[in-house]
Length: 145
Image (cartoon, rainbow, N blue to C red; front, side, top):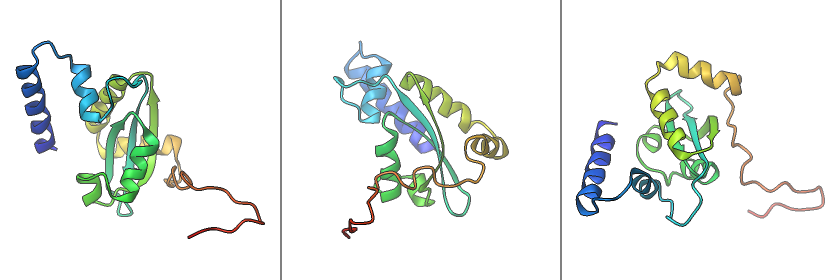
């Protein structure tokens, strides 16, 4: 966490040094991998969990893609190291900056409070994205491996 925060500040400082008039939103968009011409009006704050109970809190502009990255292991860092592949909670915001602020708020909470939040939307702590990306088939269709 400390290393990621330091990296963020270094990137922001370099961006400000080389492009003095750069806005924070442009830097945030770059760090999230969102092209400048695309719509970034909505954002998501989410909580992923592991089978052992480890929680990861993140923010994204595309919840579907990000959850698949967690599940496929292509999103590195803490969540990959600790096997956080189950979507336990998410909330949508009108603006990505609101999502970032909410992420910071949730990261400051104690574990018990985070678990209480998850239980409001997901009392059984099941994977909310378990069926995302799966095509429903009829009885006459076959699954292709």
